[in-house]
Image 1 (cartoon, each protein chain N blue to C red):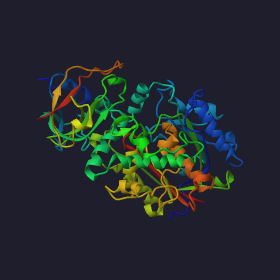
Image 2: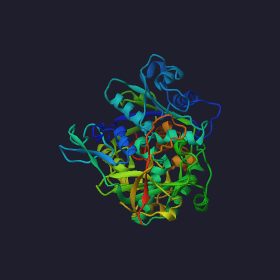
Image 3: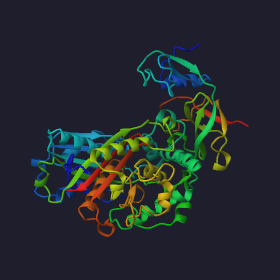
Image 4: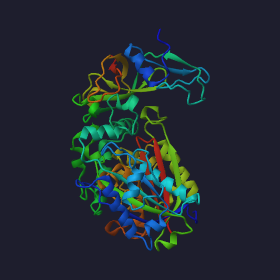
Length: 137
Length: 390
């Protein structure tokens, strides 16, 4: 189903809009990309496949944004983290419900949630959906 | 130490960094260039300058690209080859790298390198968006990160791992303001206290307003010449004896270690190798303190402190202008200002002032060897140069 997406950031967000976290894995050298790219930057192979990720991981770093860009103007304060996913790659994302540094710490377990709504602020492009992370109890 | 230079700095100039409401980027570039010409000897721009390299991060602020063309015009050099170089916040040093290589090739004898950013006239959220173009739009900026946010991520990871505190970040800002108070061209030529920093409003936790370099208008210019012709244009030459240029991943999330700036280390190692010097030989350094945490990380990447010990260096006060290793004696990006495209060249301007004995109150005594490190994005482009008095 839908595995004909191109191995690009657009393809990545196409899966996000369908409620799936997928990325490209190189069949030649085995490296897992984040985000997907049409050619493996490690070995230059175009033999790639889409793999589904669990969406679960651990907070490796975080910040609380008080001064946003035009994209999320009006939504501050909000937390953004770098999450180390179970599969080894890292993914940045908003942590839902966190507004102060007391509500999050390095090592917190999180899982992905698909919002299916794009706040783009004043931008006319892109129309990508946005995922977020939620803390696991 | 390398004795013959890769290229020679003949002269330099700079506008004051800060507010220039009535001027545009083109006007600022002219001002910096003219000062550089005035500081040289027997340099006739139309006769002697072979090419122009312009550094500017963003064409968005004034909806004006094609900087090579407008710079050639404003410098009175229409007809000469002129090109814009962009590596986000490392554009200035990238432009210098281009010029040094043009001169080393033998095809160009004298190259004018000018850098500028004119940004204060736009809304904060627009500036924040345009500055964010230095990071990864697809997964970082789209997901709500901002440029300060990228460094804030590195700060929380660093502070957690090495037990550093927000007060260590504040110490960097206090030092750089102390230095800027002696720099008439600085945007904020006044001192501040640790309490001022810790009490300033949060931009991207833990980074507060006074942890962040400001939004600045300004331009700087450097005239680079081959070693064969340099003596014609100045009696006070500054030799470039080491050069290193390294990239790293665009996104912070792709880094091998998000608490270490590997690209800066690779660039520095190349510069130390080509100059035949070590970190201990450096008398003063201008490094890329876009945020206080960056200066701490750079102490480690540039070899001035061991991994995880950068915050001890600032805690011990060893990087003040009159201490063991003067860092950012100009005031750094934090207090001198950060007109993005100009910054890398502003660092060279400070080195030129210091090594020719023109730095006034903030003159580092017996300064012979200097280092500049200029960085783009969250560490994705790094240029390190090492200089010595001729």
